[in-house]
Length: 119
Image (cartoon, rainbow, N blue to C red; front, side, top):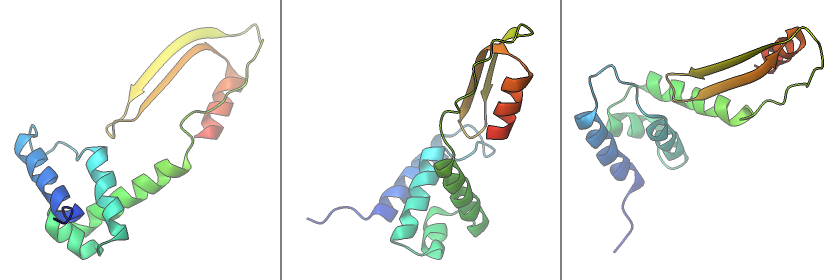
């Protein structure tokens, strides 16, 4: 017995997700996007878009997003400052893609400049 075809397996997963999502405006989960992009190593983009019922534009956007997240570090090391003009903050941000950003502790201008530079 041969292993299941990765494209047909992903088609089944996409159909299941579509039938169980809360409305048409719900973005495709990142894991499904990544699996669709991984199929580009074995299938043409037209085969993938046709089977998954997505547009070529979507696949391009997903590929661009996956490529950009692969090149960015997960953690940014920021300088430790002993400046007396610091204030303590806690910032949490959840993005639509599912990514999260957390920043807490003493913040000053030097730290903010480093953070902006890292982005």
